[in-house]
Image: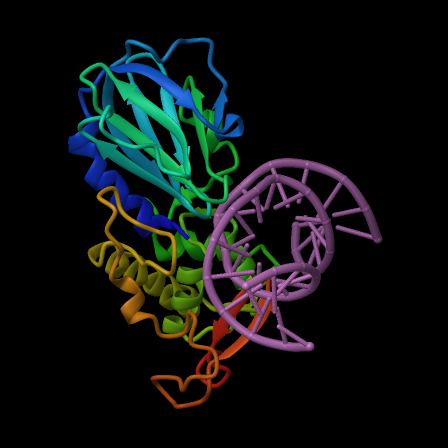
Length: 267
DNA sequence: CCATGTACCTGAAGGC
DNA sequence: TGCCTTCAGGTACATG
């Protein structure tokens, strides 16, 4: 499941591969994958730069943008020779460049989307500040928490306030901070908010260093799996002993997601 | 405002 | 072997 670290890894790898290339054609193979919300034509436009906000990947062109969301099983891969590339079973969209290279969007479950838009905010209306944005700090994080009654896991999972976290990194961050996933946001002290903010940053930054986590589907732009899954403390460890206290890790449905936590360490 | 449920999808895994 | 059910979870949307 690509979350911020996986998306960041893909963006870093694709940036030198795609920048400067000119689009010849965009071919959707599964109609719903491409959502065109612009009157401008992508054909003939040059890719100026790549960026990321939360789980969105942006390809900035000269007059419009492509925004990619990988959702659950989406992957991007660039191939120097588009002609020799046999189209795999799960290729949902092909971006063809003038030089003959291609960007493939593969997506087993078809949840992923490629949006063609005029400006980034066309897909960012309901997306909050990126979790690694330098403008975010513990004080601002606490300010976002203190007016909300919802459980902290639901808050972190929502992209509305802080963008980029998904199920894996929420569980790992809450464990690192020693906070129970059901704690109401508004009941967290400033010290707890500070600890949680630091944990979120550390968990995400470590995962970026490890090129993301691969559970089943995720691969980077070169088709390689990440290494971060080796360092999970709670995710997918139900019934196994907590590394801190030995209590079996509990799995429970919270905020509609399989949630892993240590009932002893997380209060 | 918030929690819950369903839809979108496919493939893997478990039960019988 | 094979059929059926359940589960995985990012996001949008409907409902209470």
